[in-house]
Image 1 (cartoon, rainbow, N blue to C red):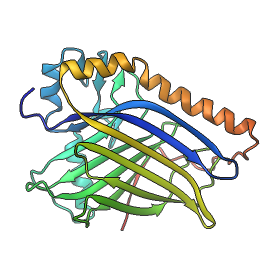
Image 2 (tube, rainbow, N blue to C red):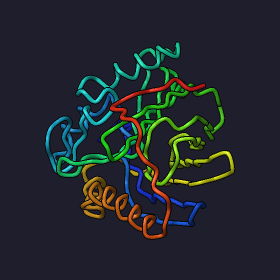
Image 3 (spheres, rainbow, N blue to C red):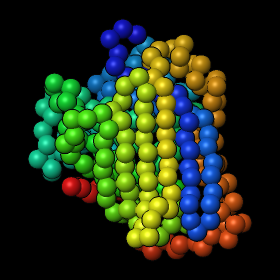
Image 4 (cartoon, rainbow, N blue to C red):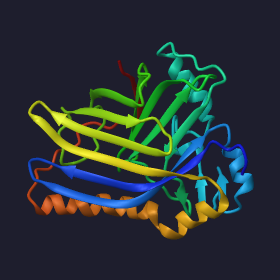
Amino acid sequence: MKNISSSIYSGIITHKRFKPKKHFFSYKTFSLLINLKEIDSISKKISFFSYNRFNILSFYNVDHGPRNGSSLTEWVKKTLSKSKINIGNGTIKLLCFPRFFGYVFNPLSIFYCYDKNLKLKAILYEVKNTFNEQHTYVFRSLSSSKVILHKCSKKLYVSPFIEMKTFYNFRLSKPGSNINVLIKQTDAYGTLLIAHQTGKRISLNSNNLLYQFLKHPLMSFKVIAAIHFEAFRLWIKGVKLVKKKINIKNNLSIEK
């Protein structure tokens, strides 16, 4: 497909826990970096990939943003306006997993928001838990460097083995030939957990996407299975369970 800026990132996700028990796991995966302006065109050119329709691989608006199936572009722009950020007719790219046979679980999705001059103006970190809840952390992008740093307090119950009173330290590179997303979770006494996603950019076309699917045929199911399996391993190790106190269906916060 010519003139498509959307791409595939094939790589590895790792989790390393430091306390109260050391724990480590990793798995190979691939993500899509989708230019929201191109999603309809991509679905028309790749027969096994659909937009808002069931297929082998698919992308649904309802999986992100307001989660009601409405325009993600309009939602992002309205969200940015709350921070007095205007990207005009700029580009919004979303890093996420696609649906596999109608199913997906995205622990983290990232919206990269560019103005018409392709200057990165904002980033939205969309965090989900296994209770079908979501919180989006909205940051203005002030750095002109390739490395982006953000920090905020945790506002959504995610892991039953980590207290709520912790902080997210985001460190990521601007998407290019490679992608690098690192989240260090800390408390008042130091580092609890580091989650790291790396990937190499591959052109988004039928052949490459089919290859990634065949390489990871049950990826979405593997992600959710891995979450529960690793939770079981932590429980076996004797890590204390943290009780879920409140329910948050879908929320967002404007961060500094």
